[in-house]
Image (cartoon, rainbow, N blue to C red; front, side, top):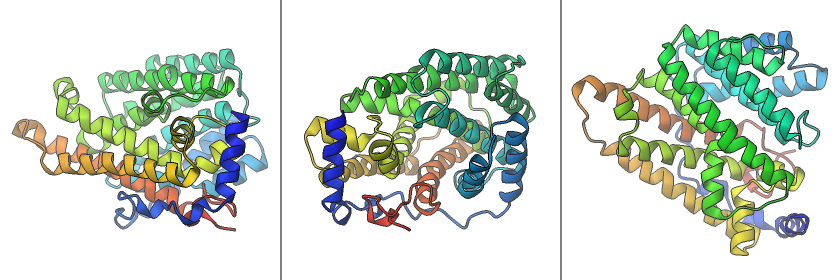
Length: 343
């Protein structure tokens, strides 16, 4: 793994930025006029995080202010009410907080799988059943549960909790094992793990609640809808791997990144691997768009809700890509992608 990272560093320094461009992503530049009411959401989330001790020093507070994660929600949930936007932003922040604790160099639970699982189980119990815990992330999960129960049914919350469980136990912990043991998965194996580790299954449930209401289980698992959900999860999680490549691979030496996985498995240089990854993502986004344009009718009583849900998934693919491009979170003077090179 160490040698692979060094090879990537050499490849990146050799000028890969000139030949692999993020602007080749076909999902970019599709976000409509951005809503401007997200700042109050950002401030309310910050107040909760401070109260829970999850922003525990000036460095964390500055990082939170700079990131302005509520602007991500404004990109990906353009039709949400302010209450819905608040719940979505708090959930996104729970994901970011957990990810930073387990997946960043110096994170509280980096390499400590037993501790990670304890925090995850406590948080899942609080979210699913409303049990009070002492762990700050579990207390945050309980806060989010209360927000969601003002917006959706107990039935929906249980299905959302199932998606969270899948994210944690079939995604995050497998990714943590890869990181701990410097394991580079095969490409299909990695993609299957990545869609879970990304948390996209949870935010797609949020899109259901925000955009379409609560869809019947028969419709949720219909092969056409299931395929579109998978395409949304894969396109969104894999384009994040492009933007986060420098941070995850070159800085954190994390093997869980599509560009790195393709480089190692296909024995490609950075630029060729990045172009292949962009082609893979574009193929998924283009198939999703074709399916959305030709979606069959499932009956008048559900067609409207389903169309809004599909539009919500499209907003996630497109809005998250645009946010990652413009937010500055993944920009640096040394980025191997020319569009992200900023002082």
